Image 1 (tube, rainbow, N blue to C red):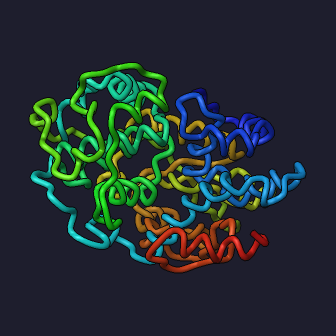
Image 2 (image 1 turned 180 degrees about the vertical axis):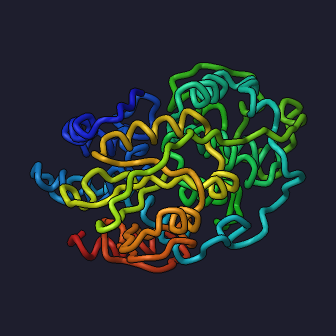
Length: 363
């Protein structure tokens, strides 16, 4: 799938959305997915922006309920992160059942599980920065529920490669699969993979009935484990040219909105904090994609360092930034992100959250 750093490219993607086709086919390898997740994750657009654009095209909420539900999942995970903070970095609801180690199966890391379609998509993830959402669940099930890994390191590994890396969606989805954010674990067998990814492979360690997962045996192919090296290479920044009388807008990896205070006479600063990327590392491909999106913001300048050092070095006044759980060190005027619904706070299940969201749009 192609991802261009272009606002018009994103508008064109939205214009091509077919909510009915999305609902019917989204779980299939060639399904009518939107391809918008990298732009939503980087704050280039919001879930609300997508909803509003589709309504402008004449779609009614009932016609696009499944699409809205999937967009709402992203907002839900962010609301959990906003409410729970760093607690999402550990088992949220219960200790992950039956894990045996805190590494990653080497076969998953290298795309050598022997499940042909999975191996193909692991290699695509590393080469393109994208992987189908259904496939993400398959990989998590292999790593955690058959490979006996604790979810945290495998989740960090996948986040590292994803152009649409959203730590809340990623970490909490891995926990959902692994059973630490759900009442049961998620499993997949070869028949399911063959159906949704048009494979005909047989005689693998997944070519079993689901009943066999009641007491799963660690497959030989997943026994070898290792710790992947995940480090972020940040770009080199030049000295900023700051107009001291102007307000300053702080952008970051999760806020690259080209419409934010558009046309106003302000300093626009893209802040990349090494400390954030030390705890949430991403690949060079991800950084390059984010930098490409930043180029869509006229006059933006790059600063690599801490927020505190930025403030001290340039004596910034009237600082504005968007709320995000990783912005705990920021000072100034915090503005809300654009949410699709007004529903806020922690809900123990998505469907409790979604029930309230539906009321807002008459579903």
